[in-house]
Image (cartoon, rainbow, N blue to C red; front, side):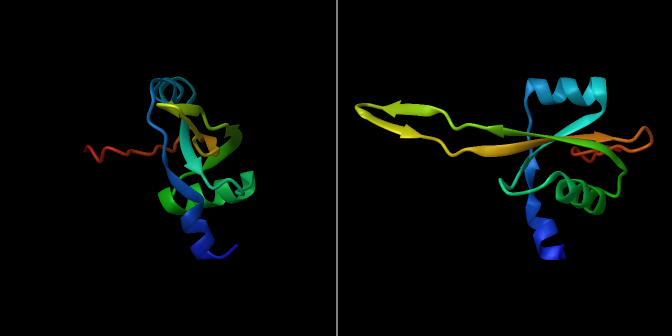
Length: 98
């Protein structure tokens, strides 16, 4: 796996009530990832970008919602999210607080 692909796998963190709760309770971080990314690729990308130890990766395919604007119907894109479990001594700080 080349460095260019590894840098594109993680699209961004998912910030929601559930992801915050999971981060506090189970030491998991939730990321939005490329739809064709594998668990192995996600693990390597997180370990390289944030210099942490990953113990497990769980992925979930999220179906896009059907939305309506007046009479026309549309559909949001499907996307994939990854629940990344970190080792006990690892932590990712997105806020940059000291």
